[in-house]
Image 1 (cartoon, one colour):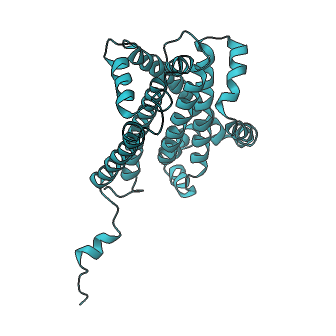
Image 2: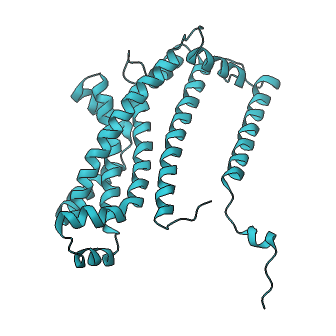
Image 3: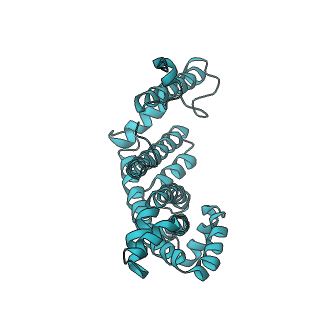
Amino acid sequence: MTASLPSSRREKGAAPSRWQVLGWQLLGLALILAVWWLLTDKLQLYPPYVFPGPSAVWTEISYGLWGTGPQDGKLLAAIGGSLRRVLTGYVAAVVLGGVVGLLMGAWWPLRATLGAYLTGLQSVPSIAFVPFAILFFGLNERAVLAVVILEGFIPVALAVSGALLNVPPTLRTAGRTLGASGLGLLLRVSLPAALPNVLSGLRTAWSFAWRALVGGELLIAGAKSLGEQLEVGRNTANVALVLSTILIIGIIGGVFDALLRLVEGRVRRNYGLEVGA
C-alpha cells in the first residue's frame, strides 16, 4: 500500500488560488505606492512639478471625475468619449476580422496572400498609420476610428484563420460522417472547435485597439478623450494630470482585458483545456 503524501507536498505544485494571486497583487500595489510616496513626499528627491506624489495625482483624479476643481469633471467626460470610440471600433473590427478570418480559413489562396500581408502589417506600430488616416479622412474622429478598426481587425482575422487551421482533422471527419459539409461543417464543427483560440485573438485585438485609440486621440484636438487630456497636461506642464490620465488608461485597459480573460478561461474550462482554480 502506498502512503498518501502529506498535504504540504500535494499542494506544493498546485496553482495558486485567485485570492492568493489577488493578495500578492495588492501587496505589490502597496509597495509601489509606498516607494512612490517615499521618493516624492518624504525624501522629496524631485520637485512636485517634475514628479508629483500620490496625493497630488489622486487630487487630480478626484477633480477630473467628480470634483469642481480645475478639471471639473473633464476626465470623466474624456473616459466616456474614449470608451465610445474604442467600443465602436472594436465591435467593427471583430465583425470584419471574423468574416475575413473565416474566408481565409476556408480558402487557402486567400490565406496565402492576404494572410501574409496582414502578418506584415501587424508588425507596423499603430502610430505609423495615424498620419495616413488624417490625410485620408481629415483631422477628425473618423481618422481615429479607422486606425482603431485596422489595429483590431488584423489580430482577429489572423486568430480566426489560425484557429480554424488548428482544428483536429478527426473532428472534421466526424462531422462529415454525421452529414455536415460545406458551410454547415464550418459553422457547426470547425468554428466551435476553434472558439478558445479565437477568444485569445479577441483579447489581443482589444489591447491593440486600445493603444491605437490613445495614440490617435493625441493628434485630434477638441475631442473629449483621454488622449486630449494627455495633451492638455503636456501643454500646461501639469504632470499630475498626465500621470492620472496614464493611470486611468491602464486601469480601463486592465479591466477590459480581465473581463475577456474571464470569458476565455470559462470557455477553456468548458472545453477541458484548463482546470478550474
